[in-house]
Length: 396
Image 1 (cartoon, rainbow, N blue to C red):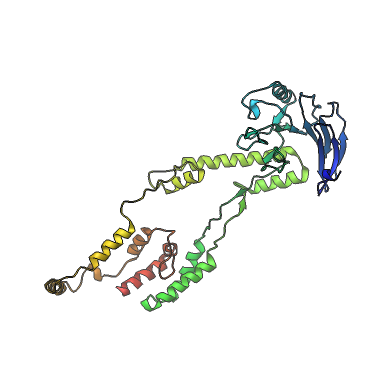
Image 2: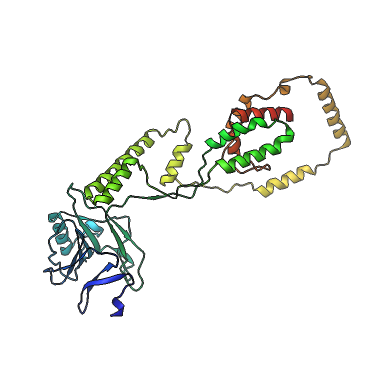
């Protein structure tokens, strides 16, 4: 029938019934597929073999059938129509108890994640259920086969949701947020090398800003890692190549265990080094990324910006009398005549003053009129700070 054709797949076998049925498709590029294995379960299971892996497509309409014995390694998946608390149901029925007992006796591991949505969405009750299950056999080291499951969105004209089951080693890949990360070490080195050729005069300030922008554009990469694996090491790369070459599930298990242990050690170090006494910025940033911080509560101020601007405008229009202006000018002339010819303000700016001012400047702010980011000035080297000190002295 044309309705049974799927582009890119071939129908290997099927079971038909007036009220229910089941089919098994395989991709065209699969070459090591064995013909269906005959079973004695009244047509409720389709068994095929792909390489060394036995795959059982199961459908249980009303009563729990006798599943065929597992041939290691094996994967059972399908619509079991069984209720049990192990896969998210509030109560257990007879078929669910039998299925849980079968999994315990046959040493099968249930692939179930309560965080994922249900595989069946009831249009009548508007709830999600989990009748579609996947069981995998245990490996030789006592751990289940490396299998992952992903429930997709609702499929058209069906209350069952498609489920993608990935069998084999799957290295977890993290998709990072598109946040620019700057490496300012090369920027500082390039400025230190070229700043000595530029005299620190007010006339050269425009050349100074052009130098910062040019060096920043050349030496600061604004990219980020789109995809990466946390705690990946050369040992992990070696294990991955060995697993791909041999196909040994024990090597894949060793790789995943090494990644888990490395991540646990890194998490422990982060928690132990978290310090709120000196600077709580890093700690709160970590909590926000983990989703544990309370959302910020923004309160509307009682005084608006328009009211402040109106008050400033009214104050600026205050008309002073001639006598008041005359008194202010006289007081200013007296103050100027009484000033000392030399004071602490006449001294040159030092590098320590520049360091103090730049350390108090906040980073991550917008550019000014000159188009220079505060991060550029904060990441200048000693020569750059000396250049700024000489420039400010001449300007003053």
